[in-house]
Picture (cartoon, rainbow, N blue to C red):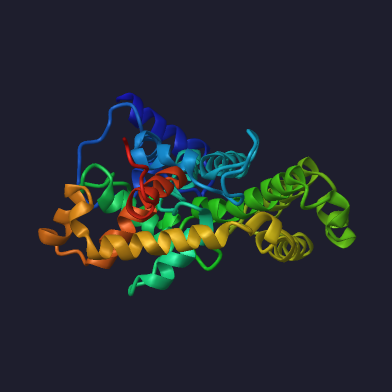
Length: 335
């Protein structure tokens, strides 16, 4: 018996009856030999961690575009906070932590530069639309490893695809990540908004603070404990009606006070115009794309709009600005 098989035996012995066991996976699109040390979901987590799309998250906007400060969240730190919250809940409920972490680490791989502003533009200009959760699946199934993808297990891909509010993950681990994503961004976006001076704690309605708490620490503690206490021994991930409603209400409050606040979003129109211009340029000049993207059209049968979205959505904020300047800003003459 090798190390992986011993780990799989420990899962069967210690995990909840509702947990997703590694040896019960529905498998990968391409069958491959098992690792002798790591169960399949741990292996998936490692593949995501080492891929280029994951590294680029550190230079992609979370909420604040190009913030002047070292402590604002970006898409990578958001991902790490989602993972930490999700693992805490999964461990308490005796679910599969490796599966939970793999889904959390991969859930935003397909996110655009400039946050949801970039996503809105690509969804508007691309005939087939654009949804970052579906793009994350495209990243792990096709775009990484020069067209080979990461060949992740079905359960990890299902959790990534269904992490949005409208999603319905097939595993409890996926459901944990879906809620942890909201818990993370609600709380860290409040923290960042307070740091930016566009929100004060006392401006959050008292009725929400009375239920959830009046600090980031208190709210995280309340939300996490509520999920754990209401989900133990159940084949679902649940919240109490009181906390669930307060969480929905504070999320609506954040959309009104921060996510659409001109002080936080005043530069988004410029970012949207930049992404739209890049899309139009690449659609007309496919030859300037890297060869692997050109061949997705000429050899792989992919549509031009979809491949252009693939390329732009993979950009960091800074790279998008650099390419925009290259194509549209006149360069100084050298005398």
